[in-house]
Image (cartoon, rainbow, N blue to C red; front, top):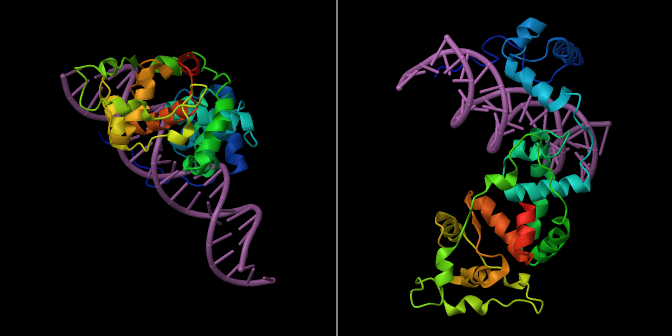
Amino acid sequence: MVRSPCCEKMGLKKGPWTPEEDQILINYINLYGHGNWRALPKQAGLLRCGKSCRLRWTNYLRPDIKRGNFTQQEEETIIKLHQMLGNRWSAIAARLPGRTDNEIKNVWHTHLKKRITQNYATPQLRNYTAVNRQSYGGDIPAAAGEESAAQSYKFTTFHSMQSCGSASSPPHCSSESSSVATAENGELSTNNLPEADDSFWMEVLANDQIAMVGSQQGFVGEIYQGQFGNLTMEQPVNETMDFWYNIFARGGELSELKEIL
DNA sequence: AATTGTCCCAACCGCGCTCCA
DNA sequence: TTGGAGCGCGGTTGGGACAAT
């Protein structure tokens, strides 16, 4: 496929938009809409490429854009959605009315990512999970007309987990799986969070069978023992790692998990 | 007051997807 | 079925604003 030349090569303007350009774009879209972004700048009399116009409109000029700082609730929603959806900024933005994917991406990289990273590092992890135990209680608004995030996940059963402890147990099953202590109330203690690496999560995701690796035995064992039912999710490794860390560290219930999703 | 460093965000880049002729 | 056109997405960057020295 032959790509169209970039703006610069076509002699079009790049860089920050002037108020005059903004006004031209707003006036044109208010009058004619934006059916064809490629043709729009020429018809509107702008020395910009269509792509630049679309970006300016969707990220800044749209009348329904909410300006200003993100509220704490919005930030918590972003954190929650990011754990579920990963870097799917547009999907996250669809659940935050008035916020753009670009804006959310920026706030994630400048604020939220650092916060999460710091809190994942033990012992701060406990603080993070404690915070999220509260914040996860809220509703996640579904995007209008869009398949819910929940529907985009496919749940499968850990068949092999059922066989752990039996004569046919896979090699990775071990009676040590119960060695991870739970709190007296039955919740998993965050003191016992596993040191999970990518290979572990790859195993979790690869099949509808669970494989346990070394120190992860306890972690998986707890799932098998009914903390969450026998559930896993098909999604990229990194997202799942975050997801499981969060859900599991909070000692969540299956019903809660379903509600979140 | 001048310089340097850091943060933040608007805008750009390039890839991949969908649509359509 | 193929390939061009258009669009949307996520990653990256340039440069202004502000803080620290």
